[in-house]
Length: 28
Image (cartoon, rainbow, N blue to C red; front, side, top):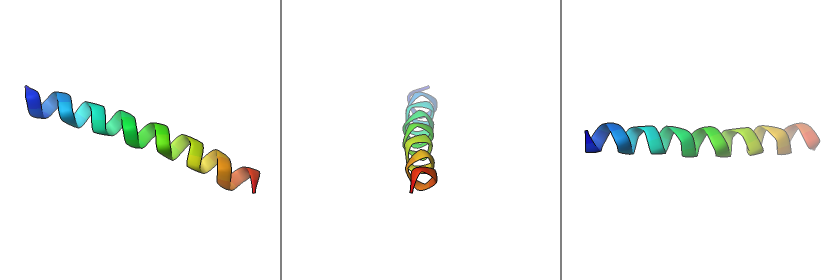
């Protein structure tokens, strides 16, 4: 359960960074 929760948090973290990174790349 702990691993699943950690995986979900990591996925959310990557998704968030991936979104702003893609937005930044598009802006540039």
